[in-house]
Image (cartoon, one colour):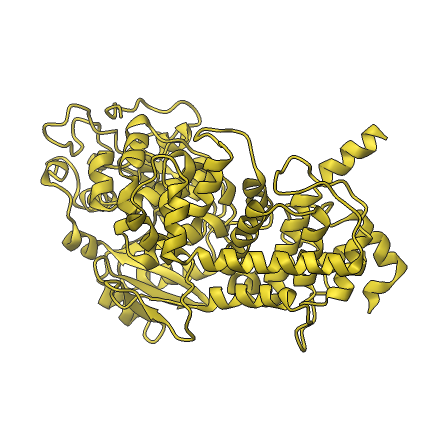
Length: 573
């Protein structure tokens, strides 16, 4: 193979950690080797803050009302924030920032006489000049009317809060209806009294935004009028970098405890903080996430770890006492290493995920089998530290599909400084081929054991016992099993009480196959590693073996042999 050339041996000696990041196109390993307070009234925002517009908007001049004319919860001491209609031009929002798929849906619905808005996180991200993960639309049409508008390419999903999935150019655009939200509202009447001074359209928008989780998600954008509607101070909270609930945090989280996980996810991705009241109830009600549907927890954890904000998510989960409910083995690791809840330091687990984050983004996620593989590898190393060369050779063998001979050749030619700060890595030593192979295969066995034990209630309970003041192991073990969808069967496992939600086994099988090729030291028949310098993010999101192995190996090498270690070595020389 070409990898046996002297040039590639030289490239191997330089290591994989010097790859430039972050970019859409990242070299593969093969290419690298080859070449609580009460909410107070918000004051008007300083420049370049939004200002309330006048009757130029088609709704009503009263829609830009002051707090005294806005709906206010009777009996609540704090006044509601000022209603605002803001020109999107103030934030530099342009038509080109909205993808064609979303525009197609907007145009079709509007052409039939329905009002349409972009809503939620995409509006927040557009204001912050970030790339939205997706674009959600809300309309005055009923969901049945939406489905009829896109005959053959739309389906209504969900029971409690149904929405319509519209399929456009291999993408899904989520469309919700004002009518659905009006019928499904469960908020206490104290928050829903209508002001006699507001227009019908303003009340409709305000009522919908009131049912949303956080003020920064309670924004609506009319792209035709180029107006952003802000009824709960979301723009001000974006400026203050706060994740604040629309209604009191205790009430909000008890109504829907999934909001606790969404709060962590949003804060991690945006680098935002919680107001004191929100932070208090995130911590106090942390154990309530165990009541969530299993598929929902898996979805939320995947959003945290697979979309470019895994390190920050793990820090926040640990800080607010949620990690022990979701990933108790990792929580036990933090506890055993005396990593404080508010610790600003780092460790190998966090570095692994920070390296993973450097390859990902909200619109370039990975398959869950990748972050599961990283968790299992780290757990194996936390239990039994290894020589850096052993870990590197293991990653190379996995990347090469089990070609142990070639992995040894490349691994033993590496001549770089490893990161000596991690207790999971031993001091390097000289290995002969026989013993190095044995150590690599031993690591594979250990990784497989860790993967298996993370799905066993007995071992999960033991992990919980290692965490001071840990919650009930019965509470956590059931919750934890949903995060890693590993059921030892070739079929799907129906989750009790999940309303037809099924946990797929593909992730478990993908990870198991990765480990077994190294454990047995036999190259997979017909497998060829990637030979170009690109990451195919479509394939990565679907978990193709080539891309999962590719990025896994890059993450491992960047962690063991970071480029800054080489710079320090050169400086000392």
